[in-house]
Length: 251
Image (cartoon, rainbow, N blue to C red; front, side, top):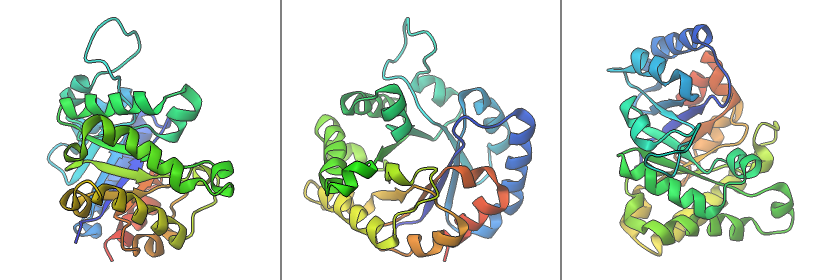
């Protein structure tokens, strides 16, 4: 059985004071979540704070993006080695907001996956369809193509220890959530796509669900056979809500 993992994505939220209060609350309650893995992906300026407060604790930390380049004249960019310097374990790759707002292509997402692996980070590959694509019956094709763009570039073995997050774009921050059955259908298809390449990698691959995950719906979502936890947005900014989601994953 794959251990569950819940990652909080703070997006562009936080301050030193707010983060300190949030992390202290999570640390005070982390013992209540059992063997569920817990991590937070914080904005770049707060990586030092996360490292300082979370080192030698059960909570891991990571970043929300990285450059595909190792170094050079790329003003405003952050490399995988820099993230590793701050003790990051995880980095989000290809979040739908990066794809939609900043034009990140499947090819660029694949390059960022390579960059993350080069510094020993755990890439969290985000995939998902828009509402128009779902209503057109294209969910399976869209998600499979997003996965294939990286699989074809790096090979299936590169996903040993990596994470995939299915986030239906229409459910992110909208209050709408895929039903457990809808989410399970896509998660099962993702795992089957990997299984066609390597059954062992597929069996061990953590596939998280993201998209308006709340304490009220987390238990039913996480109970599905191929859903191994969550990538949580807004609820990860509220101590009690985030801990309740993690507790739901432990049941």
